[in-house]
Image 1 (cartoon, helix red, strand yellow):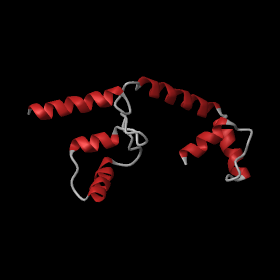
Image 2 (tube, helix red, strand yellow):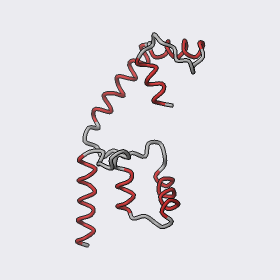
Image 3 (cartoon, helix red, strand yellow):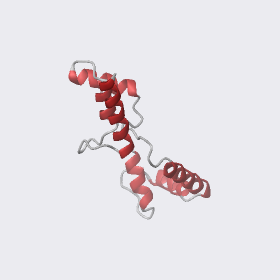
Length: 115
């Protein structure tokens, strides 16, 4: 749903066929308001400040739910490393979300072997 609204905001001259006229008008007014633009700019600054952070790919799904789904899928308890890899790698190509996530994984794995 978020992606749908992001696509609509890119071109406010075209009302999508799935959105009612009154809703589009209200959303357009809000997106063009100084209040929204200010909040949007602050959120952009906040995201930029987190560059290099170890991002996870779970979105709004709580980790306990992801852990439970992993167990249901595999039929067994997953390791912490498996869980970390799942929540810090890209689904499409299984690459790390960023270098910091990979470094944290490698550091943890190294400590585990030395323990």
